[in-house]
Image (cartoon, rainbow, N blue to C red; front, side, top):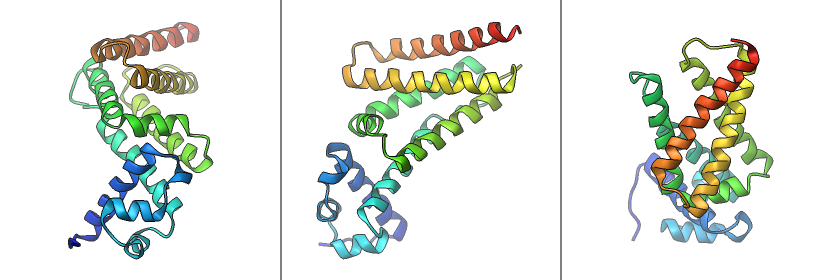
Length: 192
């Protein structure tokens, strides 16, 4: 029995159905019929919202990236170290809550359009981090340093989500310490 939903609610439901399926199986192994069945709607209704499976797939990736950015948005009312911890805790929590999808996305990011979505997310994180840092050093060096740190966070989080060989709090403190160390090293190299 079909439920009447608002356009936004139906779209969100389709994104969640797509996220679930694309997290479990590669893009090529998921059909429009699978997605429609998971959402409990007809294939024709799905096409009313998304012109193709590819369009839905990219919308799922974009939506997940936006939710990750929202979950990691720093609380600017907090002192810098608490702000950093809160943002990183949000990152780890989101990665854990969406572990299958996170792993699938990070492992399968060879797709150009997916890579562009991920790059926009990294750009956003670097820009908001630079904007929130007190007493910043040389802009180009700081930006490059932060891109390296974000890559380190992604790689470390992927490894941790797959293996869970350390408690979350230890991983969180390790990421905080790495941030401080990386910025300290960049500052020393710049002669600040």
